[in-house]
Length: 177
Ligand code: FES
Ligand code: FES
Image (tube, rainbow, N blue to C red; front, top):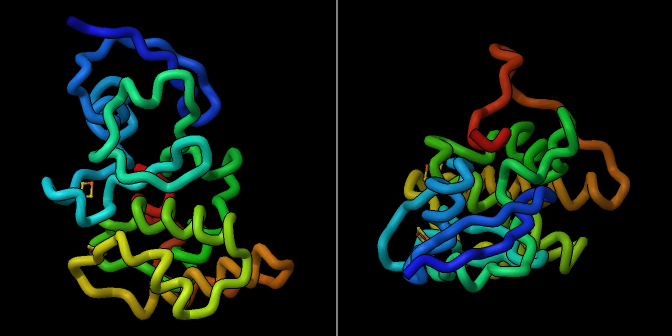
């Protein structure tokens, strides 16, 4: 029998009927229509589905939607402020912290949580903070650079400019689509 869940998603309150077995990631993608949260595995290992639940990074494939009842969820679509990217999104763009981009929303959310908890992480702390996220393209060097750059920007430094000059378009995954 379906249950009602009341969830604040990216600042907007909503109520929906869901099966008790519905995973949060399926709720976000199929009910809320927020497809920036990706599904990259069926073993809770890849982290592509990472969202913030009451400000803490969780794998949305390992949480039931009913467990989010009365709570607040932020997805990659909710990170930017209007047309201004979150510093982590901006840093992933600037430092080209992605290859295929499939894992990027999860990395962005995990990095945002990491920097929220630890504004000046060491490289080891960045690696540990992102250990639940896998990039199958193995683009980790630029992801590390992006997180370092985001930390610097969030601590008052300037973010570097994008290395590539070809397109003004922002990567879809970093922007949340
Ligand atoms: Fe959630 Fe892979 S889809 S960890
Ligand atoms: Fe391809 Fe990470 S950029 S899986």
